[in-house]
Amino acid sequence: MAGTSAFVRVGSVHGYVKVSWSLPWVGSFTFEAEPEETLMDVLRVLPYEVDDRRPDAVVVTVTVEEVTLAGQPSAT
View (cartoon, rainbow, N blue to C red):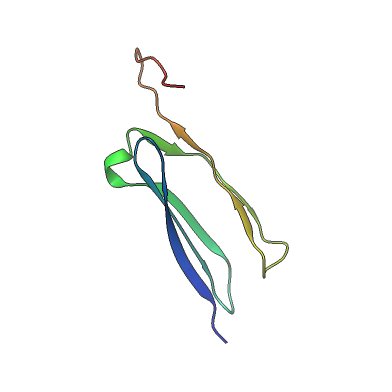
C-alpha cells in the first residue's frame, strides 16, 4: 500500500514550469505549479482547479500567463 508522487517540467517559449503532485495512500492530494526561479518575473501561475471526486483519477487544470510590465507591449 503506497501512494504516488511525481513532477513534470512543462516547457514554454520563456522557459519551464515545474508541476508536482503527491497522492498518498492515506491523506489528501497535494499539488504545486511554479515557474523556474529565473522566470518568476516573466510567468505567473494562476489559481488552479483540482477535481478529486475520483481519487484514482485526479484532474488538475493549470493556466500560466505571461507577466506584462507597465509600459511594455504584450507578446500575445
